[in-house]
Image 1 (cartoon, protein in one colour):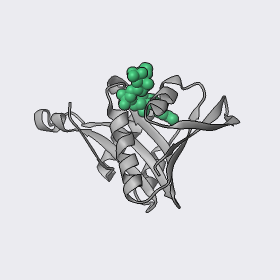
Image 2: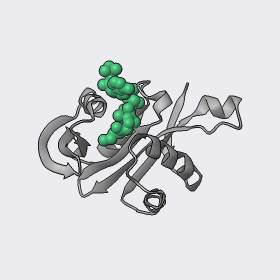
Image 3: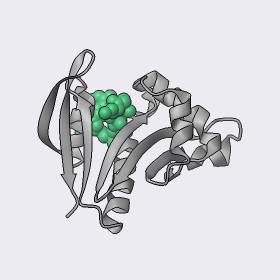
Length: 153
Ligand SMILES: CC(C)(COP(=O)(O)OP(=O)(O)OC[C@H]1O[C@@H](n2cnc3c(N)ncnc32)[C@H](O)[C@@H]1OP(=O)(O)O)[C@@H](O)C(=O)NCCC(=O)NCCS
């Protein structure tokens, strides 16, 4: 597998939405469409380039992320990798892309909220350099939010 991280396009939305529904399940289709047109949105996908080469019928999008650039901060709003490809480094590629983009454009940090019960995601973020900065009790209907930050400078 060889992945290219690139800006999301209109034709990626079906695949992105399917991944979201099978993993996180909180955004609706139109929210992704809207992200294509926000000038402060960083909406990226992970495309399996080997599929492109060998199987024209298979869809090559296996992961995505949506982040917002607000002043000198980047808020990571949503990130997911399809269930079949998790734990293969794709999430790390996506986060590294956002980190580099943020660093090069002068951003100070990456921020996010994650469910306290989402152990895989918490470990993933810690492994990628994020630190816990706080907690919001009952932020979600059935869970607390853990606040995390990765300083870029
Ligand atoms: C969280 C997520 C984006 C990480 O992407 P990924 O491509 O699977 O992660 P990577 O392969 O780059 O990183 C691997 C690390 O992530 C964590 N991890 C990811 N998937 C895991 C799994 N299925 N089981 C255990 N740990 C997992 C581990 O810390 C792992 O490192 P380790 O194996 O050395 O312990 C992905 O697992 C996912 O989409 N999860 C469901 C949606 C979600 O929870 N999104 C985050 C919402 S805040």
